[in-house]
View 1 (tube, one colour):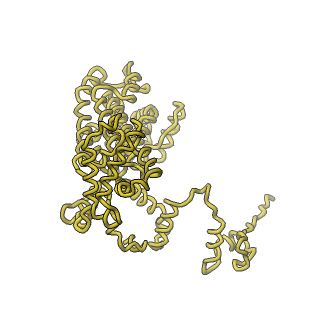
View 2: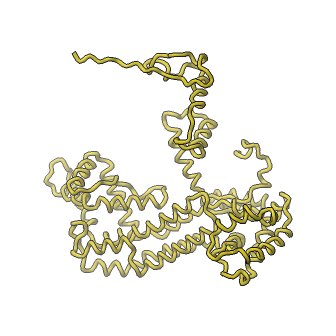
View 3: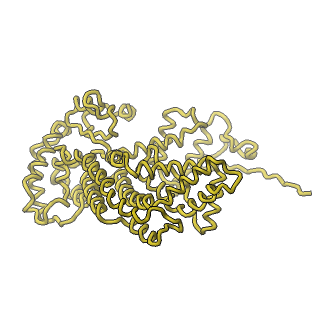
Length: 469
């Protein structure tokens, strides 16, 4: 295990939380990894990744709706139509230049990606709408001999969908929804997000989506303004007289499942006793006068102390003293607390200024602060591994691959990186001459052993004089 590689033998006494996706291998009630760990460590908190929860909520809500059956299906067809033919891409680009527009690359909306990927795919279609419609009109006209009947029919079918007023309205609504979900997804992928912020973001998102049930979003309002003359981006629309009425009648049926799925997927943050107790320490939920702070907060702190009692005692913390220190800290906060202060501002300041005064209670806060909530960094690690270990580097051993990934994820930026010492070590450590110092890259000016410790290896490249006689 990685703990053993880092020479951490007592990790079972230190681990307080595990975050993973919702696969049964992780959260299975009998054979799941977290269940087996909790059998040995009852205090261990198993957290389902918040970013994955959001993705699953969106997937469940959009299933068998117009968004999936029509819009996402069209995006897949549209992306494949151009991806398989560089000639069509060139023609589309030329068409966009005539219309004085800039083309964004056609992208699929399906696949295992974050929800922001679907937003970008839909944004590219909306940006290319006029150029794509003009190009499909040309391809479906059957006036070109280089287009097969099958491709011409496919172009006419795609154009028919793009000319539907109902399709345009749902595309705009989908963009408004994905804009909100993408913002939440990117927030949940941050490494520094805290539990209090999660519930606040979810609650705000549910309220925004609830407003969209009866009020148009920004993109939908803009699209409606452009469709006043029965056309959109100079494309004549079909079904205009009845399209908007049908859209209004079914809009709530398409959006309400999303609100319901969000509530269900994040209900454990309210139903779980420990997670709920943590959220009560969010200062944004406190009254302006802390004298009116309900006794429930005291009970929630007691829940946290009792749940993590074993690991607290293991590390020299007195659970009874922790509870007493919270009651004293509460009195201190009555004189220094400012309404509206954020979790990070309040507890970050107290960690720096009052930790020595309340050591046992802040040991509990230490545990709360390190609870993992998302595994987005792990997903980024998978992508990074695929970029590093390509088909041409399949012989990289595990240790070298791990070192390269750590450097890429945690290393300095290119602007702050001083490469001289690394280059010298690379230059001298090889068992044979390095390629940059042998022909055809250039003649060797000095042997590696003759270079001083502070001297950079230099290469003088040969240039050939071309005769034009």
